[in-house]
Length: 138
Image (cartoon, helix red, strand yellow):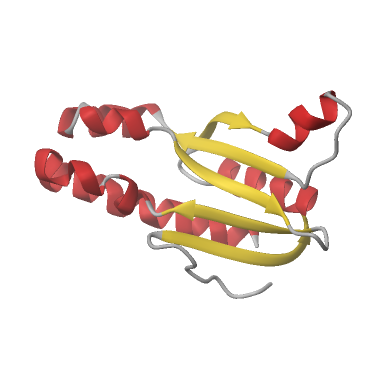
């Protein structure tokens, strides 16, 4: 796998040598082993295929857990708009997959003044969870 690199401020981007479908499955497997769950998903490429079009693979997985939600909302109701936090799998022209996400600490940054230490602690915890998933999925 190609080393993780940050191409957009606050993003983690991991380009892999794995094909798109394999990377999606590896992300799902990594999430199943992590203290978080897939609670939403969307795929523009699946939607395009249903209309007879082919676009590069594209899947967004929303990850969260109810106790994370309760902790987040206790700290900042406004931060609730950001949940679930997403991981993004995309397909390059050569068929390989890339895994990307915004670090949860970046996602929650606009709410830190309101959310204080409780939200900062949750965001740091989630940064570690997402990093672990990314590492396992490679």
